[in-house]
Length: 445
Image 1 (cartoon, rainbow, N blue to C red):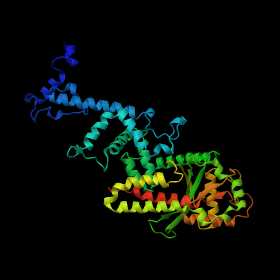
Image 2: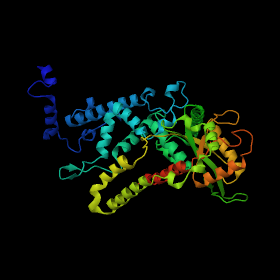
Image 3: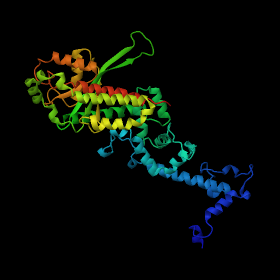
Image 4: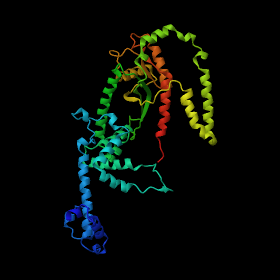
């Protein structure tokens, strides 16, 4: 009979009795009672253990709180273990446990969330109950929250608690610290966040960024040296104003100027044959450009179809009554006028270390490009004998053509920069798309 009752197989079950005890006015204590303050008591300070409380309401509430705390602590201990994945180990002896730049990407909240939901689900539910109000209803539809979603806020708070428990569980704090470091945040701000458990100390972030940069440099050289990998480099001039906060004799504001670049792996549709140097020389010798005319170069029928669709698209965008044909116009663009459409492809980008050369001075531009080429695995002594796609914006393209003209009579294909092929329109379009979409990252709070 006792077994049936405790397992909920009888007519009445334990929860009914507990609910009766909690609702009964006989269990309500006076405010001046010694055990009235033990409602929802934790086990700290000593003497508040629920088994030592005599009154039923304080005992039951303390039992619930202390049981939940015990489970939260147990789950947290499992979550902060090295095997869980929250350790940002950079110098581990086991190569499989070392973190890379890719581990600090946009999917880091998915990684942290998987660990939290596996080991700290109770803590997550408690914090979500405190952070989220019941959704507002519009008729029978719940209004979806758009600003400040609770998921990253809760995971951020739990990560700070885990980092406070042990400095090893620093995956999300390290990601935030690297973001601050890359944004040139002040050391005081980083120290303040380190004090709150939101990021590691400045020295730890600096050492981690340096180690990750070295490892990324090795990967860039390895991918650039791979004969099967087709890639192109994008470079541009960068400036940073160093302001002297305390004016003294001999100190003044200085503008730091340099060259920065990235190495982008091309999509699989680009073959290595497109970079054949001998094929380029042969085509230049054939001089097919002499027969090129505007009439033969442009498909005029295709141009007129695109213009007509563009005009219809403009009308559909500006006239609300024509909004119903937007989908038809989009399908016409995709099916009727598109020529050799490329499938969507996520480019693999390798950042290159900047240098302190000035782009507008030819000798410094050459030194800067040699430095970037070396980071892509191409040096005068050891390089792949194929074209190197390298360029940037309009000024970079102009300076690069000028430099190629200066060096055209130097010995060797590398020293004369014959291997350098500046793709004019492609990189200009990529640069424009990047600049346009970067503005989309700015959101209103």
